[in-house]
Image 1 (cartoon, helix red, strand yellow):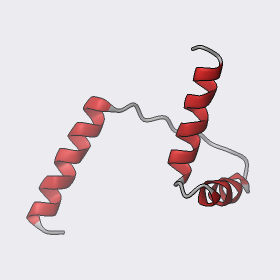
Image 2: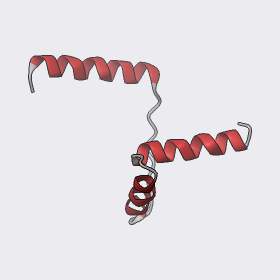
Image 3: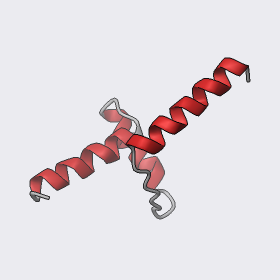
Image 4: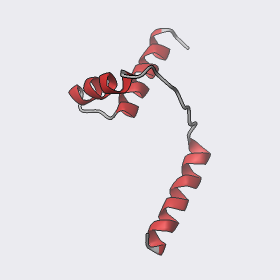
Length: 63
């Protein structure tokens, strides 16, 4: 990894820590494949798919 790449990764990590919350979740075995398939059908990553679902739930429930 070059010096520029290392510096860029450090900048990105600092920005993420300052502006984002990280939430780790676990699912039963086999769920990942289902999420990959569902997300792929929408042209999304698993993260984008789950994020969209959570935001929709929050909006629908006025939270």
